Length: 279
Image (cartoon, rainbow, N blue to C red; front, side, top):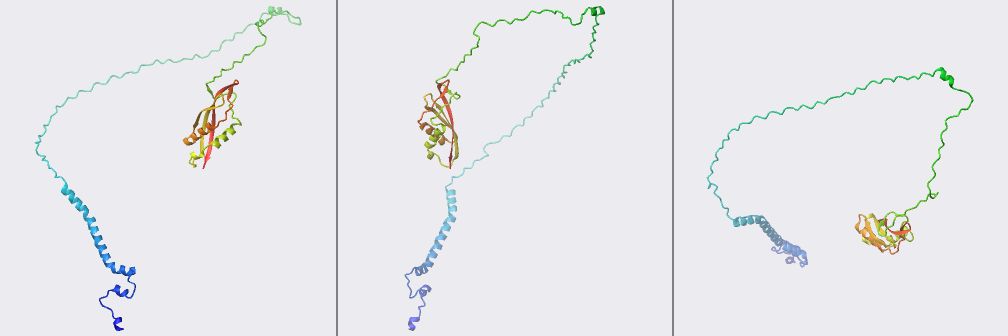
């Protein structure tokens, strides 16, 4: 029994700790190889640090060894001749020209407007007729004949119809001109609201991103004399919305009732504002 309890003095601490235990467990292997792994890591780290520290010096030394030799140029080959000093002769300054004579402004003759004082016109007094002339006048209730004047007779009317006739001249209607003002507007079967609903139902919303908010445009097209639609255009800030609006309007196959002037069908340009909400 004494021999069993005695320990070999050459045993390490790990062997004493893991005696009579499962040494195949990883902890024993880690404790056994710890010092060797630590030593290798220290040596490798020291080598890596030395390489990183001395690499710039090595590169600089290599550049110095491979650099081309600088050629020195002797700058004393050319003899510099001092420049001769040039003495400029003094130039006599010409006296300044005399100042031009002052031009006196032409004197304007001032004419004073003398307004004559108003003088009252003398009154011309008509002397009364003499008494002899006054006695010749007759006054009283007796009627006196005055001066007869000829009566005015208007000229006879010119020959012709008694009643005036007015001839109404109607403007000529063009078959090729596109009108914007007509007597009878172009109409869609069922009204303009029916046309709007067809446009909205045929509109492909997948061409839009969906977060544009409120998008507006104005569609213009020409309603031909036969009721068909041509020259469809859309003016708005969003190009995709304009293109889809034009395609949708062209897809409506129902014919319009054409606009009329003097009862004749004409080409008429129709404007249709279109607004949609995308959220």
